[in-house]
Amino acid sequence: MSEFNIPASREQASPSRIAPADAVKNGVAYLLADLGVFGIVEGAQLVVGFAWGVGFAALWAAGFFTGDVEAVFDASLVYALALAQLLTLTVTMPWWCRIRPRSFSSARDRRLPRGDASFMRVAGIILLGVAMQMIISYILSLVLPMFPSLEQGYDEMMNDGATSELSAISLLVVAIGAPISEEIACRGLMLEFSLRAVCPEWCDAWRERACRHRARLPLGDASAMRVPPARFWIANLIQAVLFGILHMNLVQGIYAGAMGLVFGWVFWRSGKMRYNIGLHLVLNFSSYFVGGIDTVLGLLGPIVELAAFMAMLALGVILFWLGTKEGQDPSKVLPL
Image (cartoon, rainbow, N blue to C red; front, side, top):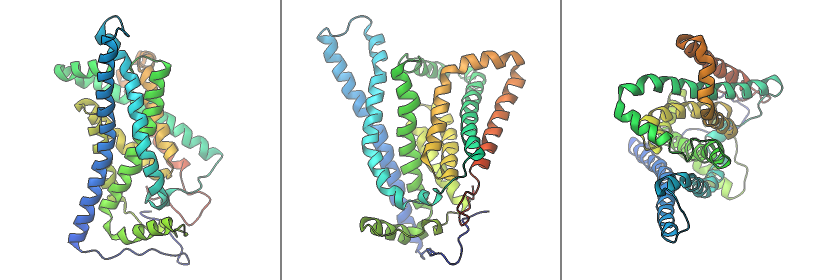
């Protein structure tokens, strides 16, 4: 089914006719909003990084640190990353909480079936996260040796000691801070603004919902604001590209963009932020165990190993799709 199925007896929202020039203005405005969110995330990292560097230099000059200055500074960067994530959340979380009740994605949030369906959703997320991590690692091990300069820069970035070694602070930053801060910014705000950019015919409807929300009046039925699958994937692609660029590294940006598409689909499919945050968490956490998993499954041979990862990926998608099928509200059907 390509869109929500709403009974005729329920209040319907109607798309407004919008002139091409107004549609372009609407699209530009919300794409600029996407760039604004991008600037917040990237700006938080730059501001904290600069302040951290200045503070570290002052403390080093005062004799607070000893040893290899470069190694000590690299090891301390994980704390700067934690502060940058906290700063990002300080801005994006209230923003997301404000627009969430009247957003396109709010129409996706409905009661999901429990019991076996809950198990399928959780199992699907775990399988997806581990499979994506291992497939990316497998592809990088084959492709990067063909590009020595890219491989050297990528290895230096990933093995800087700040987040590559398992510790309490690195776990907090990699497996908790990054999933929450990045999902709120990218799948929450960026995806919403991208949807508004590609669905200008609903501008009157979401503005009316904004006014009703400020007046604390019932918002009405947001599910009538239909998003065709093609437009969802355009919006999803926009936020995924921005998510990839956020990583400021060609290699990481390419696979992060691909992962962003999956994160966006998981969020849109379930209507609940916790599932894409959970997927992001599993994927990042499993990065600490890539070597061990590869050692065990590598005994089966490279072809069988890759086939096992692909099977895990397919099974994860199927389980999550089945676990998020139509729930207890028979008036809403998920299209994707």
